[in-house]
Length: 112
Image (cartoon, rainbow, N blue to C red; front, side, top):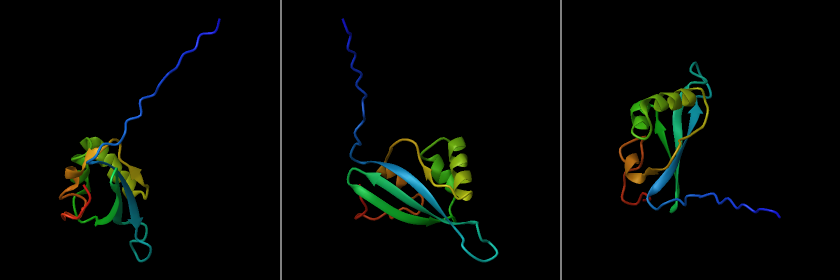
């Protein structure tokens, strides 16, 4: 007699108003600072769509990332960006957490 076991994995559906964030560094291509971080391209994916924008490194990236993840994780993320590696932030966050951070376009026509 065979015993059948079914295991159902719970896949969470993205909720409205939440996003996943990916940060892709762009390094300087020429000049004496070749290979250094120039700016970061952010991609936020929600149930409503995808939004991309870029942010100069003039702000405090560690403080901005610390609003989403722990300070130690934020430092590791910034280190990876300076090394030229793309980073996908763990978890999902509310759209309001982006307002005023990372050069996010804070306009009414922005998604969310």
